Image (cartoon, rainbow, N blue to C red; front, side, top):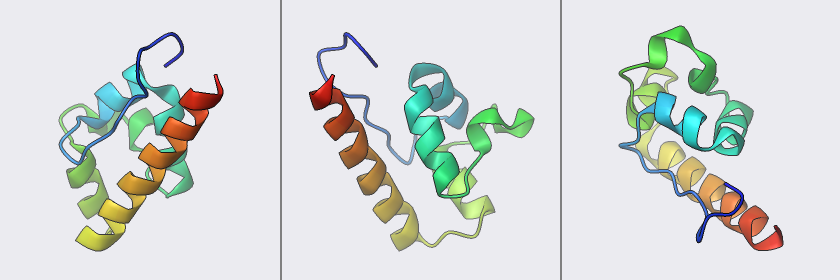
Length: 80
């Protein structure tokens, strides 16, 4: 994340494995919501949306989580 011109932004369509590779901090924040998918062997083809569904999150919960994580990533980016 450091040195980029803007913060990493996650979407429901992002493959979880890419989130873990591109932004380890996003993966940490996902884990705080109970989605440890970034470190899971089964995540190779799963999107964030699929992972949220597999963890019984509602659409509203998933969107709220994504918004909160992106807000946190932006705050941290601004403080770098």
